[in-house]
Image 1: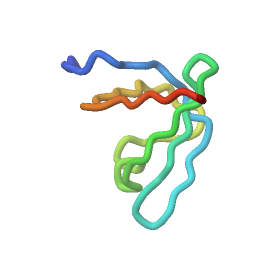
Image 2 (image 1 turned 120 degrees about the vertical axis):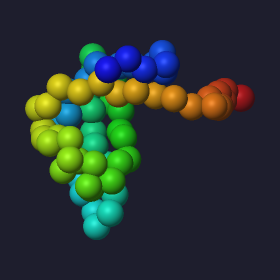
Image 3 (image 1 turned 180 degrees about the vertical axis):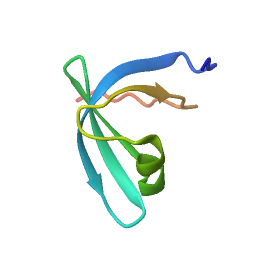
Length: 69
């Protein structure tokens, strides 16, 4: 699949914490921890499990930076 999003990060699933509708999927991207919030239905449809190799695709209109002044 080809996407226009340029921020595509290979990662491995390290944990899945599912609620009633939303699941937080914890990822290890070369030592960097990412968390994706997706529907429980998407977790099931994609067959996601701890240890699965995935690609985190990040598409955002804003990134806000702050400094500790």
